[in-house]
Amino acid sequence: MVKMKDVHVKIGEVKVGMHGDLLKTTLGSCVGIAFVWKKKGLYALAHCLLPEAYGPTSVIGAKFVSQAVPSLMALLKVKADDIKEIEVSIAGGANMMSQLSRNNVDHVGSLNLAAAKKYLKLNGFKFREIDVGGEEGRQMLIDCTSGQVTVLKFQKAI
Image (tube, rainbow, N blue to C red; front, side, top):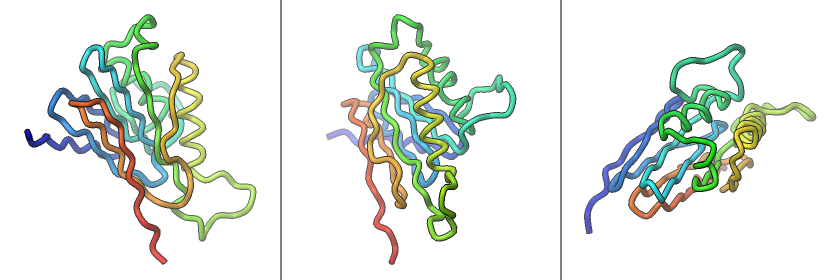
């Protein structure tokens, strides 16, 4: 068995993986967006901190969900006809400050999830949610050999 190369995706980053890589990120209120394009052997993971930029963003990155989706598409050179071939998964968006939350106020995690759904739909992607919301952090992994996306939930401290 060949050891996989861990590729850590930090806050605000988008990284592309190839066969033999294990893309991984740790999420709290942030949202992870995974693109799995098995036909081309391409995989990408974005770690989004905030829902939307206040103005246009011209750099590749994932500080904002509104920046991450176009960045993922640009890095993988996705064209409109390719969208149906790409499996998209989202995870994260937890309320990490539940003890400070007020009723009827959206927390950044729920805003990040809403933005991910919005920008993926705007670009024509169908996606699946893997373990979103709640109050626990998660680790999101893409095995770039099998194309498997896995989300591991951290136990909440008492």
